[in-house]
Length: 166
Image 1 (cartoon, helix red, strand yellow):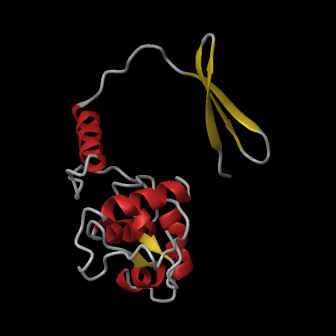
Image 2 (cartoon, helix red, strand yellow; image 1 turned 30 degrees about the vertical axis):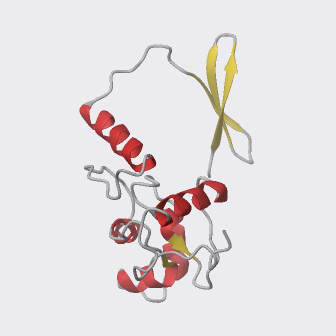
């Protein structure tokens, strides 16, 4: 069951509401105390900020991800994609040794717990369509544009804005 959340600013602070199609699962009050960030939190935030400012193309963070063996193989494959480079589900399926598992690859990509750091936004449909993205298509388009304009277009595997309908 997939739950979604929204944050509501109220007179008593921020409240998150988690719900699915079946119903509301949880309501959380946000703690007003600022949490102390670990050095890993700080490093992740710094690297993400560098990425968004166009100063970072590769993330160098220790990851602690949980998934099936297949999902982890797919996510590792995604981490091997270069900045501005794109691929498709079938190519990933071949790369992880399961050439008939394009659909399973799509499911693994959709369950990526670390978008941007594990660059699932670089996966397109084989026919050139943009595909989906956990953050929504407008964010995927932004990320692809961000990387395209900061990488050499002539590089093999670099995305073409025309081919994905951006």
